[in-house]
Image (cartoon, rainbow, N blue to C red; front, top):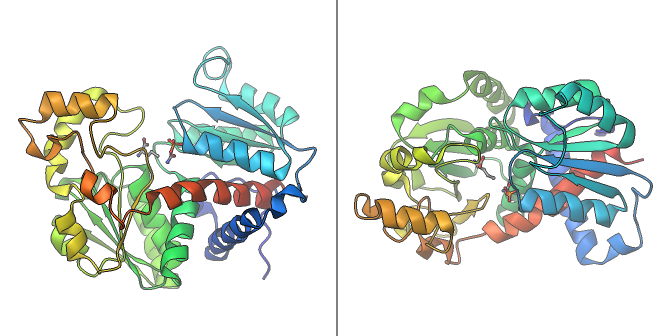
Length: 342
Ligand code: CP
Ligand code: NVA
């Protein structure tokens, strides 16, 4: 059956079907080819449409992807940042949604609670795209699995290892992406994180694994987890909105789960390294420098300012995180076009 996503919101990827997710991945690849051929300059299918992009947390990739994708498609864009609007302070999410739904054809939202996305969907009456919540990062996942498909071809049966803070939004989202594409995913980190996974996501994914192939396993040993891996993926150890005081306990919990060359060498020779970015791989950031100075002598693993991945891996040929970052724009373009196109 042909896929039709007109009018749909991308609130959680779990509200989509396997065909719909794979359609978005393939449309992203097609739109990337069109852009490389310059075809976007003579075809602006969303002229006359407008979108709002709202951020309660900072962003580089997601914001710029929505803006460039909208420009390429011919749509207008309004950016509403963490400060400078009434949203959530003087005006409820419900009332804001009702107002924006009268101006705009679609709304991107990055925030904390998944229930805020649900409220925007309910009250705006237009497609809402989840640009990251504490639970999920669905637009990221379309770009990630698009990148894996470009690099590995058919994803069914391939092995993805997500290592580090796997109980976070990206860990859950990688699990969901693997379940839709039939990949074997290993979540690697401390045993105590397993019970902090959202059980309803695990059970939905188990149903999808039965349908699509693939599987979920947990590991507390990065070298064993890496064996036969096609993809090694990690994320920051402290996420947006989490308190700075969490850095020390997280470094303590995750010091054995830094992606290093020993882990890469334990994987398949053609393994790729992915990271949603931004990444702590050296001391060229305020946080990286601070972590190095405060915790470098107590925890040698962060002595250079690198946390979740060493600079050696980050600068190596295995790192495809910048292809992945570029693909955020192509995939967000696909999501906008599929849901609000004519
Ligand atoms: N990966 C990602 O969402 O990046 P930003 O936080 O820069 O948008
Ligand atoms: N887990 C990270 C992902 C950033 C794209 C965060 O929520 O900050």
